[in-house]
Amino acid sequence: MEGAIDAITRDLLTMQEGLDWTVTEFVRVVDARLPPRVFYKHCPELRESAVATPSGIPVHLQLLGSDPQALAANAHQAIQLGATGLDLNFGCPAKTVNRHDGGASLLRDPERVFRVVAAVADAADGTVPVTAKVRLGFADRRLALACAQAAEAGGARHLVVHARTRNEGYRPPAHWEWIARIRHQLSIPVIANGDIWTLKDYWKARSLSGCEDVMLGRGMLADPDLAQRIRHWQRTGEQLPETAWIRRAAILEAYANRQQASLPDKVVVSLLKQWLNQMRARDAEAAARFAMLRRETRLAPFLAGLMSPIPCVPQHDDPAQALSCSEISI
Image (cartoon, rainbow, N blue to C red; front, top):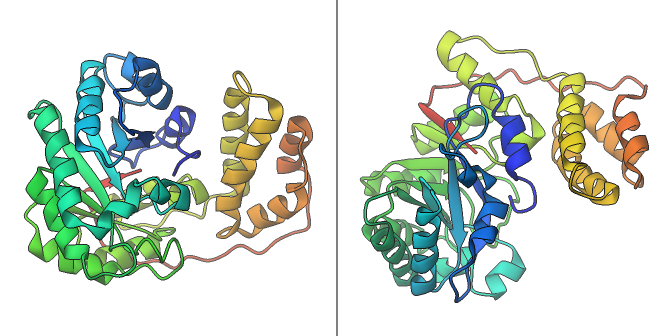
């Protein structure tokens, strides 16, 4: 979720109920202890007494790297600055990150996963929980269980599993049934992740993985009401109406207005397109707006285009059935 889930996005997506905690974009650690300004940039919530969004949803700081000593030093730095939870990224599939020995590249060697988690857990010394996110391996799934067990042995309090390998990227389908194989072998909580776009997807992920909890990523950008939709079903057994375009547009406009205070208009437009691109695959009107605005570089016309009249577009039905979960995060 690099470049997508900053403090403003976290704030906007936690204004409604549904999410239990959030995770920052990763702080990239190479071989040195980073200065406080880097942590504050990724997690400005550290400046508050409670490291949480304005709505009170906890924010965990995520670290990405491969050098155990450097990660331990930065974990200690983060805790000194007030971090209340540290998450380790072994899931990023980006070629640039993997080429520089970060993210999912470590899944080729479970021992390296263990050393990283153990070093950070030792640095935390029980003061804050250390957690991890993995995929089902790098090129294939042969080491999926070994890597998950290594994270647990290193001291991870819970494990998020994205239901694809690094080489599978984000191509469907997500193999939620593979998460069940891991969950059966671990004693720590396992959280299912990957391709949860709708209430129906949530039900399938819960059913096939057996996990009580799910983590939402791109699905929350596509439908900002997804967590609330799941939570409402858990409590009432009722399905909320589909998220109207006017609601999606209001989120985008609020995001733009706040980003405009510190970023050039062209950069804000680029960020809006990134978010609208996530929406368009699951919403016909978002797709029409994206097609209409994809070449626009000026902020005012772009925002006007979010609400200008367009031909009527069909909406997708989501006749979902679901089971419940106790915790949802992003």
